[in-house]
Amino acid sequence: MCGICGEIRFKNGAMASGATLERMVDAMAPRGPDGAGIFLRGRVGFGHRRLKIIDLSEASAQPFIDTFLGMTIAFNGCIYNYPELRAELEGKGHRFASSGDTEIILKAWAEWGTEAPKRFHGMFAFVLHERDSGRVVMVRDRFGIKPLYYSESGDRLRFASTLPALLAAGGVDTTIDRIALHHYMTWHAVVPAPRTILSGVRKLPAATIRVIEVDGRTSDTRFWEPDFTRSTADAQRSAEEWQDLVLDSLRRAVRRRMVADVPVGVLLSGGVDSSLIVGLLAEQGQAGLATYSIGFEEAKGEKGDEFDYSDLIARQYGTDHHKIFIPSEEMRAHLPDAIAAMSEPMVSYDNIGFYLLSREVSKTIKVVQSGQGADEVFGGYHWYPPMQDANDPVATYSEAFFDRSHARLAGHLSPEWLAERDESRAFVEAHFARPGADDPVDKALRLDTNVMLVDDPVKRVDNQTMAWGLEARVPFLDHELVELAGRIPARHKLAHGGKGVLKEAARQILPAEVIDRKKGYFPVPALKYVDGPYLDMCRDALTAPAARGRGLFRQDYLDDLFDAPADHVTRLRGSELWQVALLEMWLQAHGI
Image 1 (cartoon, one colour):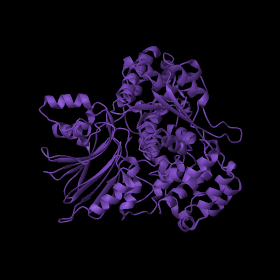
Image 2 (spheres, rainbow, N blue to C red):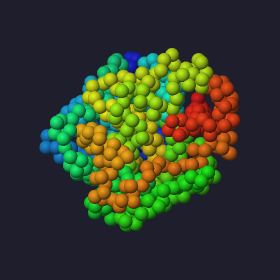
Image 3 (cartoon, helix red, strand yellow):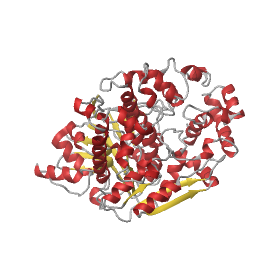
Image 4 (tube, helix red, strand yellow):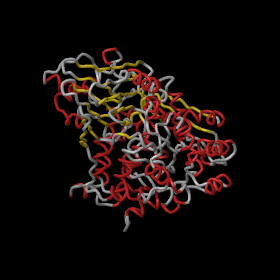
């Protein structure tokens, strides 16, 4: 829901620039096609693009100004429990001028201050200005589902929902951050907050409240932490009990995410996770639910769709199903658009899938639920089982997940772009060393749920859906469900080939054919095998004058990739050529 931006000046007499705000607002037009607004008060200015989901009237237009409280807000996201919060706040004497969730945040902040975000069920990134104190507050939800980027230069801070919006404002240091580059090349393009690939742009970490004083001083508070400690009762609870608890919690999570003043659909891949969302909504009486699936042409004998399974679920629950097939030529034609829609470079092949699926879905609906997060929360990936008996959890995780070692990276990057130490391994070591997760599997799940998930699958879905003004909601990242999952012993999660507790719970809802199928991924086989026109696309990007001038990669490495792309794949079976070319294509798409 929407895009936000703003500028804050710290020098006496300096004023926020309306022209700068207009450039940022215009750059985010696809995120909010239903309206736009700008607020200026001296040194502070906010901008907003609106996608109307809750309270379709102009009463909830943004930036939202509460003259009685003396506060202004720019908000992106949805607070699912806003009706309950409104009733509680009205009981405390607050009066409302709108019927949406935006105003709830201001009243909650006035009533509870930094405790307010703990009460929110939802996805959110918001920035508010207190007229009387002059403070500005930036807040991002527990899992970073909604993005919040910022840049600082001298006496000025700018923020936006997208990195390209900050580039449109100008004055950004666009040199490559060498540590972020190390993460990108090592960790499957994941660049943990606060870094981005650009030295001059940062992102607010998830679950963070940042208070910015008038003179520019800042203080951060983390309002939520994942917890994998468990009681004796939890350790002894039976698998059947856990299954019932998970299913009840997921029912609530799915039901919460139906709150809207417009219809809500489901992105149905045909896997367990999205199928379970459909089944639970049908169980709760949702009739005529709109579901959407996408498929691509096969390549080298590999099928490019999972329609057999999505059709099965659509028939079983009588959904209004939309099956979308994308020819290879159409996919290739739109790849540059999907890359330009990324706030940061992301290598996963399904970016183009989500981009084109969102294009079609947005023609008929504004809000969908999606199954992202289940694998990270419930242990569905192949690198979790080896962690069970790991004597060296960091080494085991790195060997299973990292695209390349630091030593191999030295043979791929030009010497001037190689970080001085193994930054990615050091990050994992520090994260694994934190208290609250003693079991090696729990360490990996905590890292993936709160870092990898934030800066890969969740970011991908936000970028590609919002490129078409489509809001995606992710019930598997309901924080109460994630807290429950953290208490479940790893053996229950890893049973039955992974996600055992979720699969067994799903048997109460779904047909066995969907649950017992081989694990699938968003299939885009033409990008998995980089040849023909896709090889030409990669070569063109990496030999362009901008790429040669940047000189990120060793020429002998590029020559090897061009000669035999299929011989250079990562541990996760990704193309190394696609990874390095995607970075260059993204940089060039944004004029960097």
